[in-house]
Image 1: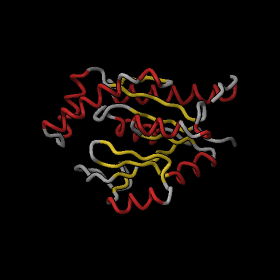
Image 2: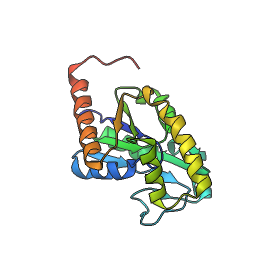
Image 3: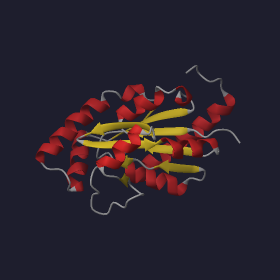
Length: 200
């Protein structure tokens, strides 16, 4: 059994990455989700260990010192990180790993030699329109006017970098987005066996 593929799925806050990836993992065999660690407080209905691992600042800082994160970053005043041990154990066991991540995290991971393309595939998820993104952010009920403006400004900057990714997927509906992500996974596994790999 060969090494699994790490799928990095980025996109602006509110685009629906968490919902889409939970559905994807539930429907796909041999695919696991790497759950991020964050210092932010849980939103209503978020369960520790499912959407995120919710840690306090001291625990997060200690993990950074010990080198436990594959990548970590500060976003909108909170810290986020990917636990390296979990990802490596899954990939070495031949399982694919999908990771909901920000653009900073994608850069950090792909700077590491073992995570060059095609072993790591980057996908950018976009909303069907700016108006729809605003609607989704407001629907979360966790954004005041200042936070909403900041997230929209960040989203616009992130979407300008979508061309840096292997794939761009529009999340116009959860079902359609999941189908597209499944197709990307199939395509990348075919590439692994049938085409020369590009140099990293």
